[in-house]
Image: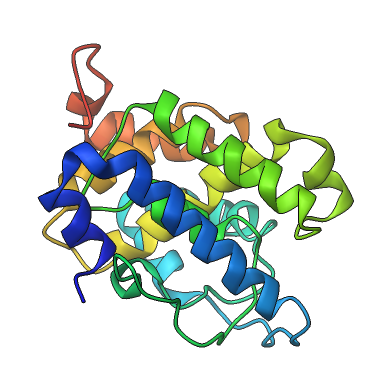
Amino acid sequence: MPSLIDALQAQPEQTDALMRAACARLRDWQTRQAGSAPLPATADERLQRGLQRLAPAQAELLLQRLQQDAELPPQQALLDQLPEDGALPAPRRWGPATDDLARLLRPAELAWDEAREIDWAVRHWEASRHAGLLDEELAADFGEFWRRLEWSALRHHLRQLADAPADERRLLAQVVKVSTRYVALAPLKRALEASHPQFFDQAFSLR
């Protein structure tokens, strides 16, 4: 079975259908997982390494801020395991409601216009709310859901950057995008402006 990334790269004209189907399978997985107990929190060493690599002077402060919405350890990445027409793997962890959606919408290998990301996220949020998968705060406010999704994506990208991956340029661009939007991430933005000024050019694109 091809992975979701393989399918998206091979059939770009089917992107919307593939992403909607992947989101639906994710909701099915979350529904099955909803009654299971979460794993205990653990130290997020890869996240810390990614922060130390990009903003060493502010790493501890930023780590505290980024962990505020992530009291549980990161879930196993589903992206490479989602076959085009298969089922999700057996549930293993239960973490922040936005973690796996963030991996679907912002993989290291691909990038889409934000309008498309928001469209998929809104549809997923509405369906998740209808299915009772969100807490009261997230169910009441898509803006808060989107903020947490962006922070989930940021944590995931920082973990990947800790390992100096082949897709480093796109991951850095994603980190820059999120760090410029939130006051709490200003130390990370300043560090990136000093070390990677090219990402702040108006003409820069994720594509």
